[in-house]
Image (cartoon, rainbow, N blue to C red):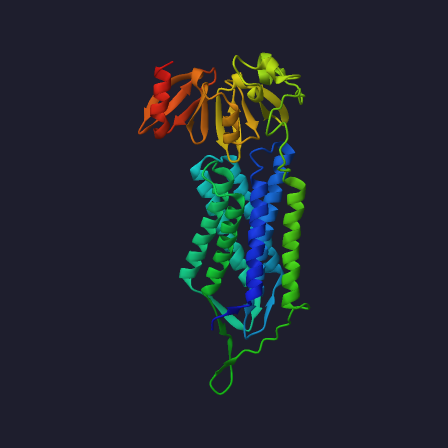
Length: 399
């Protein structure tokens, strides 16, 4: 016999999945910037938040089942399903963040996470105990697995790909719907057949298994699970996701004196750490507004003179800045960095790359596109898109 679901609990489970996806993706986006203990904390928080949201969605989905036979939840399989979800999600996020630009690594991470979600689902289904035998149609099992992998791919594509991403809210909705879709696809392929025992005139009779219901109602348990999921997401968002309000260090360089944070002359060479008016280190013709970039290295904030920038690469919502010797983290998006640069000295040769024109040593073809190599002491190359190739060649030929 098939099963039906309580509509309002189904809706609640989808909302839980979406809000958990939003919180988990928000935390995951901070991983490229996090270093040391903060990175580990962000990784743990993202794993727990996404894990709790995914597991809560599935648990609510099971609570939504309407069946003519009594159903109860076995404690041990339920706890195991939760632990599997958190551990696998955490491992997949760690794997994806270790090589965020690798398509192969992101695909592997999505497969690991998707497999973990499906395994968690069927362990959770094993926790259902009733007077009926459970049967799963293989086609629906395969479909739910594919949806789980795609859902994971959406999460990692948004968090680590760097370009062509949906807004955070839209991505969270897509991920939440995909997670919910995986669960209810698997449930659509499940049937409950009344258990039978030997005996009676026909030799076969229904089993009368004594099933003890839960002490609290299904509705109350659904409310408690949802509140815990929302509380977990909210607590991590409030404590670990930084304030999005603009600050002088991350959004604009104003005309007042800049105070240096930390000091490490080895990182910034002769320019050192900037103190006082940024125009003191501005190169010839540079505008006061764009004389420095706020960057970070080993957890310390510095102000890098624009004339020392050789290349910029997009990393999710952030960027990495190469000065010929060191690579720094920058909290600005590639569009914000581009607006600060002198357009006569820098060019965006790819949707994810900006280069200083004076430091391009060679330009070689790579199919329809090209690869630019810099004249820096440390080898550095970057792609040039087909659309920008002719423009860049014309500029270089005219210099």
